[in-house]
Length: 146
Image 1: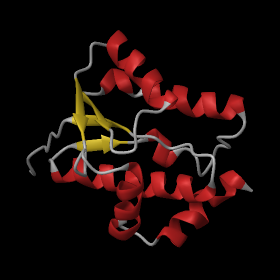
Image 2 (image 1 turned 135 degrees about the horizontal axis):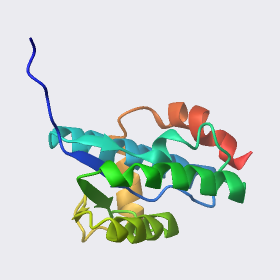
Image 3 (image 1 turned 135 degrees about the vertical axis):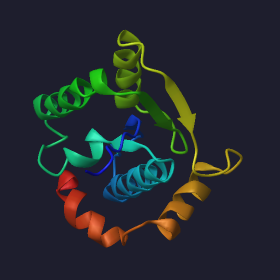
């Protein structure tokens, strides 16, 4: 019988919403990179803001709330909250921190890029380093700005 693999369950928190399609796509690419980074740390990551926006309309307050509540419901089984801060801290991330504190879940701050870089430099690097072509992400998340 195969040995059971147990990895720490990590909630990924990174900014998602942006006022422009390009901003949303950059944030989606960054979230994908954060998930990848977590996997390379031998963790089992989950990012509700990566999974739910393709099926819920983030522009409708009731659907945004539904997605956030569904993501927060998974916090109870999480071992760690990983805050990926290269693009700053969003309102959704702050809400996630409040839920994490209610459950006493450890929080770790992470960066994929040097903190000395400007936001514009980081966004340019994300465009260059994206795991999948940005137009592929636009096909999945682009309808948010239609």
